[in-house]
Image (cartoon, rainbow, N blue to C red; front, side):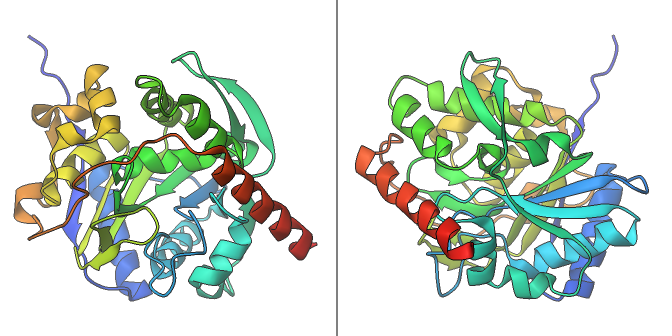
Length: 314
């Protein structure tokens, strides 16, 4: 019988925000997960830039030093760097400014983009999404989520972070139209990573967000970085690290329902540390989950914020 190949998930301890040390850890993860770049590749770094309204710690966003270290690593390997996202509120540049990412990236030769040019895409689940052209046209997408508790989805990890490729107000529209109809919202989220073959996820667990989220949770010094080509496998590993019940995550349950290999522990391999060796103590997760659907008034507020951002930036 042919042995089924396992999915590598490179997990390691990391407690630093020093850029030089982060580059070393990133290189270690990439080498052990099998990730490489070609000279001239166009690489899109897609951090979590959900909103500027998460001061003073800005735990809602991927940590700026990690994005800086990733950008430097990519540039060192002869590739072109683009940094972009489509925040829930406001524009990407405004969120980057607020959380310190613009300052962290200063002096580097790269492009900053807000996902506003969209391509309509029919997803396997039967839904349609307006997906950022920049994400579809890059050679490599590097997905850079932060480990966060989530008041609606239980956790926000690698798979969930791909929702940022849906452009602007369409995200809120999907919440409103599909959030309370069976598992339609989770089906959409689970389909998005498949649009980007060869993409790689590196998750920021240096300081995670616990208790609630995705905006205003509390810090937890998790001290972990991890990466994999398979975001589902990466999520499964991180769920074990933080002591979360996978069955409480609607998105993980959708992936399990589909029989995705990343949900099966015996299909995963750990070339560096094992999740049980990095398990957090007392990581707090939501006790109950709020409805996924958005009230129309929240969509209107978000639309006004995005319009105000565009007017101000022009």
